Image (cartoon, rainbow, N blue to C red; front, top):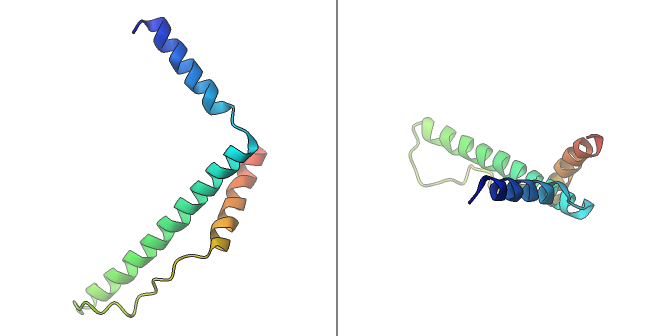
Length: 89
């Protein structure tokens, strides 16, 4: 490809990324919030597992670990926090 074509493709891609409607932005914010909350969940779960294994109890009994998934309300709350940031920009 020539430099002009590459430049045009990059410019077009930049334009497409910047021209999102409100629904697309909200969806992305919701996806970010979901990913954030699930990362926190998995980190907490791994910490709980490590605590059991570090106590010298190498057993397959993981009943002491809280494996309940986060509520949708937590995800929505996090999305609202993130969306407030987007609105300010």
